[in-house]
Length: 300
Image 1: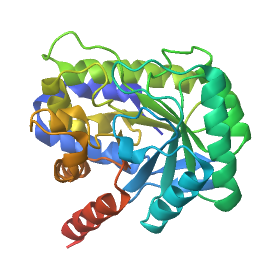
Image 2 (image 1 turned 180 degrees about the vertical axis):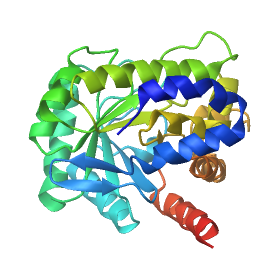
Image 3 (image 1 turned 120 degrees about the vertical axis):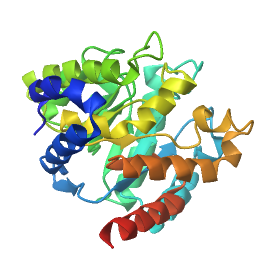
């Protein structure tokens, strides 16, 4: 369960006093360490890896794009062998300054990928990265377990109705612009709390929150959020972090997405230290190693 009303009482102290933050966030985290899908519980007592499978020609990290059925089979076989816990399939690019493809083209790409993956791997949990209600509806019917909405319900107001009707786990991303760097985290949590309330009132209980690194945020805001990520535990929902190879990593290093795997692993490890339950990644083997070392450190 999540506790948005209680969170509103604690958030001021959480941001000011680290001891209060730790006490309450540890309590909230214990209360929600699983997500229910239609045929299983996803255990979040240990961090999971969500592997990115982009069925797009214009991903910002082109090494992760897979377009043909054979490429999908090869890619998915590899990432499952490396230890992927969840696949996140996206058929419409949401990179900055991109123009979304139409719904017909998105479904053409997505349906081919879903059918191919479900035929060969019937049990692997699948998340579908879409902001469209009609795409989500069809994807759920074809076996999608989670809907990952990078616009937090803002792009298609009917999407939440689909989620509520099917009781499908939902990734709620913060993508709203925050006017300035001051009070970044309190404003972000306020938005997520309001949306969690609304979803709860619709009967949606399996919600994963994503702070939305890189979505309408300055570099400083991104790092402020990462530094205080554990405060999001006050929402009582699992936390997903998608920070892999993003511009907040490669721009300060005057580098490229292809060259920042070490920076990605460093940022993901910081996220794990601050309570991330799911890492959304391009590089499964590297993320699994980071999680393993993190767990050895915390279990010693």
